[in-house]
Length: 455
Ligand code: F0G
Image (cartoon, rainbow, N blue to C red):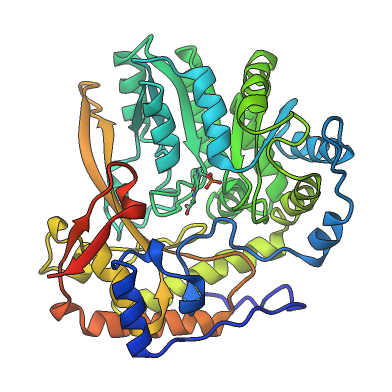
């Protein structure tokens, strides 16, 4: 790990405090042991998500004042359109209020009942949008992605044998191939440029369009320049642009690498698809020149998209992730190696060998981390559908994921040391940690709304 000092300094601060142990116990009980019910003022270091939780720069705050709040034909849209075209190379730019709104527009346009959508791994809202259309999301990550210790530098890659088998076996049913960069569920691991080129090549052979879920495209491009020998020293924006050139379009939750608290877009080269999206946009989000955002949001995002590609920022950001990764590993926690883009992923089964998946060990770790140090993280289990590369048959496989996600430009090294120290205490007490049972179980999105009790 290389010490990379912050390439920024604080101009505004937000107070945080560590509640007492007794308070933490009470707050967690009231929250039904579900971290999504905890309140911000009761959390010391919040690593629930890196989405919309970053700090904007002075340049972004200044840009807010330039917002043109005209309903139709806003100047702010022109600035935004130019920026997105420049970064992605796609002609048609449709603003949306956040990533899942973009998924909604695209999946409604692309997916028919019975279709399948192939990806390295789809984020949970994306997969649900495919399912809502009567389609089936199929995740083609490689088997090594289940191995926390495997040193592969690009665990986010598509397994190309699985992709080929899926395209052959399910010919005529594949609506799209989607590359999620970085691969959020698969430990925020990057996708290599070589892998993306092969994906493009295979999909083209079968006449299937390729899209990029670009939420963390800049982190992915940066990690490519660090891990792929032939890409070292190349400007990050060039690498990103090449990724986009290998797809037909993208959507982005700009709450991540766009360095804003709200925002997103769809950008595509196909005019017909853009028109389909725009027509739905008017219904669900707003007029095509603001798409559910204020003009000022578009201005801040136009600045944020460029700042998110600066190498000083990306070097520091990924060094923070690596620092947390190394600290936890040295403390004896099994974390996914090598570290990825947006956070650190913990092997919960290894932490609590006495608990089975039915004991909800993901709740145990989030509860323990909060109780020991007021730190919030998230954990979930996903049932993925993948492909047997030999037969092309669809097979189910669970994938669990417990994540400490780092907000952008928010926390310093002392906060990370606090997290590492807290995790040490969690590890020390892990042998006696309780199982949790679900006491209220909503029909949808249980992961956000369920309540638990220790047993
Ligand atoms: N795609 C990816 C890869 C994501 O990680 C997310 C959100 C979305 C799409 C949806 O975007 O939230 O703006 O509607 N991920 C957040 C997370 C919530 O915590 O990882 P959104």
